[in-house]
Image (tube, rainbow, N blue to C red; front, top):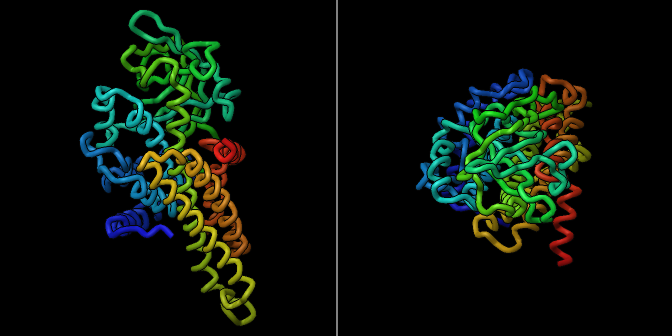
Length: 378
């Protein structure tokens, strides 16, 4: 079991208080509106929960990866859409922390840490989701600029984020060294956006296509080395999958909390349904699964913080186990609430819809199993 220290417990209490008092009351409205929840973002910024883990030298809170996971978990417990602001922000921050130049970090991280700007991460394409190497967005060097052309799909916070980390083919035919990563500004000439996707869940997280038409990016916005974009992409996901695992744990915990509260009040056959052994077995399994997933996420977070050689396995395992758990637990929560669970009057149907995407984005769980198997067989 992973035992947390007092600092982590204090952070959890603070994050839970903010989430419960200020995010939970508007979570259903965020889901119904299906637009970026600016008020929720303002709450996160005011509480210092919007971008955990940015070092203090760049104006951040400097918390470790476990603290970041706890923050994500507590926000997701009440509102997964608000949580997605944090996780998508991290997707843009991690490449800067691990692969960018010091000048680039000094340029962009303070704005993110202060809440002035959001990051987005643009890698997926219509024909290049799990198969990253199949992407077609191109980057051509032209004098002192790179010229980007192509379309990115399923980009979280597109049109909201001020900056995007964009991956493109800079060196065709070079295999794993064909991609490069760039920092693109939302107001760069040649960038435009599609309409927000109409999603089953996570509706308050805005997702759009991003179009690049002769979009010029100065050469000093190349992240790391030319042709090493694949390393940036995969290395980033090793760390950020921990956050998706934490998000899934939070959703599952929120559904478990709601289900427990309901079955203690709901009466059938003259008794609270929590008194029935069949119900108790369901709740016990739900609690066991949530705690197992939480421990896996924290173990992965510790490895993210330490930069351990086995982070690739643990990041994939944490994301996979936690998201499968979230789907199972939210489904059982709906079952425990019966007909009420199927209505929007109670939060578990929203949590069930939100949970599904955690099995899909940042690598489907089928891909996570491929990643884990390759590590074990190496």
